[in-house]
Length: 198
Image (cartoon, rainbow, N blue to C red):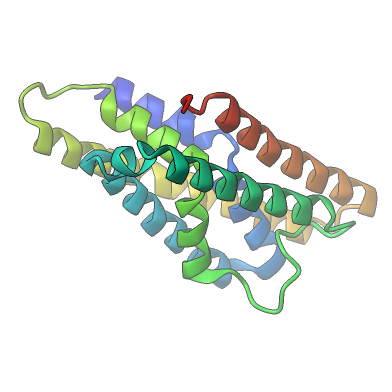
């Protein structure tokens, strides 16, 4: 169980679309919209976890044309987000929009987030610690996942809020935007390289 908890920590703490956008939403919109976005991300992550555990994700992804379409949509959306971050200019922000992405935006991001599927598949298909008691193990894993996932995402939100208050130079803000965008593109590249062959 401790190995599982350590895996959860390191897999979630590493930058991916969810944590990068959490920091960006906090920086661009503030605490309340940031909390709404994190709530949506968490609900979306739970839905991805249920899809993985139930086998629904495996069934859907076993249809080559559907898998290819979903992979393309995921990559396109993440490249779009990376471009919006990189082109945000000298202001650290996820999106320049009239309204923050909110709960629905968080759920939608997780639905197309390749890292969410990879991490949930790894966590729920590996790290067995209750042989013969699948339901109990899955329930405990969801509890551990939530206990680590929520504080880590709140820490990324706090980082975004802190960036907003720092008053960094425009060059530094631009460099942070580009670094966030490159990190998201790395996630897209890794997902593409590790996609199962059709």
